[in-house]
Length: 281
Picture 1 (cartoon, rainbow, N blue to C red):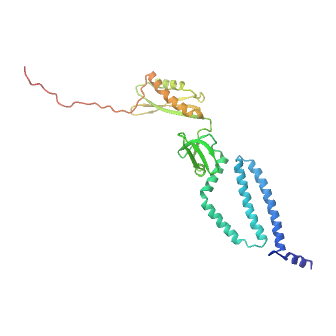
Picture 2 (cartoon, rainbow, N blue to C red):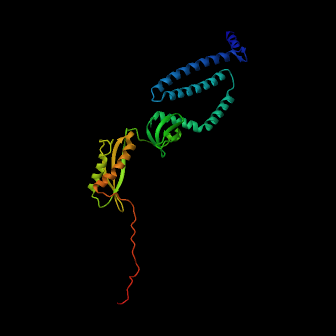
Picture 3 (cartoon, helix red, strand yellow):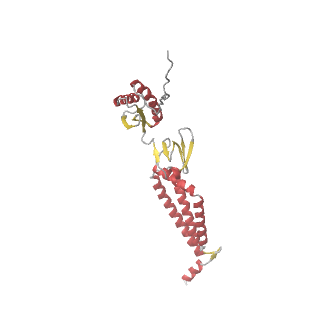
């Protein structure tokens, strides 16, 4: 008799729903909110231990929170006895459509997360990717902005940047300057090496450690190739490269070394027969 009374009470209609459905939905709602709160606390602690930026941590937390709210709505609605099959199917179709429409946006977002988590470069670094070089000015979740050496702003989608090879010329704090020159076969090797050392000694901002290197690197058809290696701070790379190039020519001239270049010698030969004077005196 008592059980029949409880059953009848739970089956009491209220606003189109039974009291049992409302109690079930209420308990489910409380449990879901409690679980969401616990999950968010744990997630925030885990994110705080990572190297991700604050805005990336907040974005990940918000996305997960909204996803859990959607799941909670579906569960509570089922507790009320609402048939959610059509809603779930519609939600799946909408999710698929949004995913396809925002494929590039989501790809750039994922690429941004990869860049923020792996830190292949930082603001101010000079980098190269897919033949594009420049100084990193801005990194966001969609694009990375570079300032090219000739003064152009270049926006690279993070999806492309994260999936391509990245060369960071600034990460080590120093860069190697490499210059190749040619000299005549008539110039002794040691004389050329001495001229290279002179040019390096006259160029400022070249690091002593690692020490510069001087090598004979090839024999050409009409010249010998020499290569000089030296290191400098990343910020001084272009200045050292240009100044060392400028110092090489006078150093070679002072040492009497000819800097060869491609040229063509043309010799004119007069093949006409000699004219014989037959006049007799």
